[in-house]
Structure formats: structure tokens, C-alpha cells
Amino acid sequence: MTEQKIYYRKVRDLGGIFTAAFGFIKQNFKPFYGSLLFLAGPFIIVGSAISAYMMGSSMTFTRLVRNFDSFYGNLLISYFFSMMFIFIGVTVYNVILNKNLIENEKLQNHESLTINHSITGFFSDFWRILGNTLLLVVVSILALLFIGLIFAGLFALTGGNAKSGGFVILMVLLVILIFVALLLFGPILSFVPMASLFVCQRDRIGIFAAIKKVFYYLKGNFWMTWVVSLVGIVSYMVMGFIVQIPVLIITLATTFSRAKSTIAYGQADDTTPLLLVAVIIISNLLSYGVMSVYYLMTVYQYTNLEEKKEGTAIIEKINQIQ
Image (cartoon, rainbow, N blue to C red):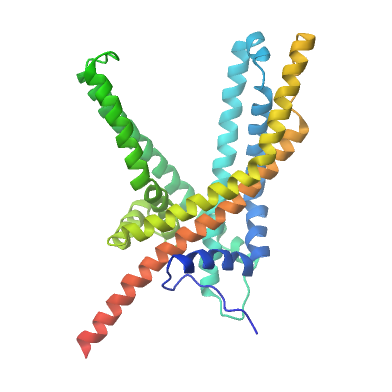
């Protein structure tokens, strides 16, 4: 008996969303992860390798003391190229994830998803998501700067004196406010951009129109979406921590080894261990692999909201005709 294909156009509860995310991966494991590894993998590998080199080169302060100026110059250049490759890789990653879901929706129950479905029309989707992602990043940075200016103004009003009672009270209130804001809005602030980029690609609209659409369906379903997003984030954090354990072990071993060498011989080895680079690359690829579960849960929750609202609207229209 053929297993029922998992489409996103269906109303689901929390358990159904969680099951659908893993079910989609199970049904389409090879084309799903194959397309991610083939298209997004090279960018993530290069970015991770540069990041690993930076990490390995900065594990001792000896090099920092000897070559202070050149160290930070190389660090900034390496950081720039690392972020550039990873940003492109993540953009490709988002496009491929969305295309797998969108193309799967067009297939009949007996048809299977293939890597070719991810490649077809890839570049038009890539440029759309890249441009809208950059726009979203710029707007987000400007919003953060604006919030920072507000807090700077509040500090100025208290005289900026760390010993003053007003400053202490303001800092306590600020910490409480940030904690509450992260708890209440953190999962939603993570949900909205991911869902919006999916809508942006599927409906071929701009990012702000997509965000407006997401908020429209989010209205009245805040807490359900909050729970789904929180479960997704926690699941990703747990699985992400597990796949990063080898990096932690190799990093600690390399750090202690260099420290022992520095104490014994008065100098440190500046080379980055090849094992550390390999482990970081593999762990980062696995991290993006497990993050797909959270991404799928986000999309299934958004389409769940669509189906709930649109389905209700259709029933109301039928009742009006009757």
C-alpha cells in the first residue's frame, strides 16, 4: 500500500505539524537532502572552512600579541568572505526548501519528488529571495538602530551615571523588558521572516506584501503559532547541540594541546588542524539538515493558518448561497 503523500494544504494541530515535517523528510529524503547538499552545500562548505580557519587561528593569544595589526586585518577579511558564502548558501537553502514544498504540492499522489524539481526555475527564485532577503536585513538593521537610539536617549535622560538610582532602575527594567519581549515575541519574530520568504517565493510577491499576508493569517492565531514556533526552536536547539558536540570536543582538545605547547616551548602552533576544519564543515552541514525540521514546521503552520481561514470563508459563502 502506497503511503499517503504529505501536502501542506491541510489543517493540522501541533502533533500533526510535527508529524508532517518528519513525514515529508521521510518520504522525500534523497531528493530533499540531495538538492540541498548539491546546490547549497558548496557555499556552506566554503563558508564553514573559512570560519574554521578563523577559529583555529585565534585559539591562542600568542599570535595576537606577535601580529596584532595583521591578525585583525586578516580576521576581518576572513569574516567577510565567510559571511558572504554562508549568506549565499542560506539563501540557496531557503529557495530549495521552498521549491521542494511548492513542487510537491503540484504532484499527484503516485508521482515522486526529484532533484530536477529543485533545479527548474531555480535562478529566478534565487534572485527574488536574495533581493528580498537583503531588503529585509537592511530594514531590520535600521529598526534595531532606531531602538538603540531610543535606549541611548533614555540613558542620556538619567545622566548616564552608573551610580545614580535612576540608571540602576532603568537597567533593571530594561533587562526585564528584554527578557519578556524575547519570551513573548522571539518565536513569532523567528516565524514571520521564514513564513514570509516562503510566501514571497510561492506567490511571487515582494517581502513586505508577504509579511502583510503572514500577519493577516496570524491574526487570532498568535498563541498556537507561538507554541509551534517554540517547539520547533527547542527541537532545533537540541538536535543542533548534538551535532555540534564533536566541534566542542575537538576545539577543547586543540586548545589545551596548544596551551601545553606554548607553556613548554614558549611558542604556539599557528596552523589550523585539518581535523577541526573537517569536523566543523560536517557539523555545520548537519546543523542545516536538522534546521530543515524547524523550517518545515514553520511552513506547515503558516499553511495551516491559511487553510483554517480560507476554509471558514468558503463555508460561510456556501451558507450565504443556501
